[in-house]
Length: 229
Image (tube, rainbow, N blue to C red; front, side, top):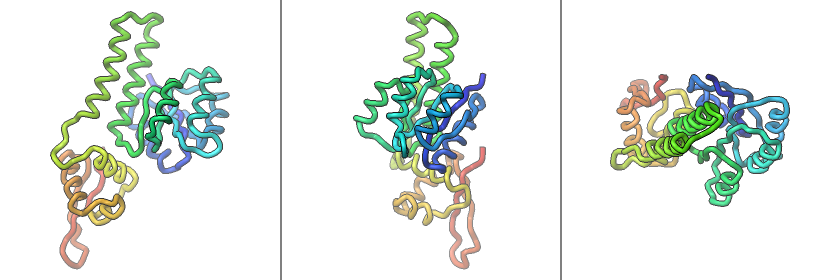
């Protein structure tokens, strides 16, 4: 079964990354992309979609008002909020409007995929039967919890923080060419030593590749690039 996804995001680069993340899953297709809430509402008036990836801060109509409008229109699509907003008021407002999941930028593909898997579990259980017994309902809640817990509690080596790790992964998602330690350090605002530590970890995890650059005219330097899976 294939699920259609509408991406609502005003930043073209973020929209492109979200689209790439969605298409990594064989069960998902892109229904469309919109740059703001007004475009999304117009799209939904004549199109249906299973899932909406919705940013909060957008011009013309922000994500919260867009979500309110979607609910007023009785549109049954599941919604995952994707935003840089992490204040409790914003999160509480969107949760009250029936958001399936909430992803705070920057996030890595692994966490994004947890949200998609949560959607699939809920959709399969709710659509598979007109009546849910207690066991099925418990399975839905437990499965969602276990997926989130597994993602958040993966053991990381000493000195590796998940937030920084996610920032580096996203950097490589956005920059497909070979990168030096100095470039990464400057772009992310971390020390060269810290950058090298994280890069070595990602190499051991087979997430990025490393190579030696002999063309510097001096001491050879290491270059890094995301591994194409």
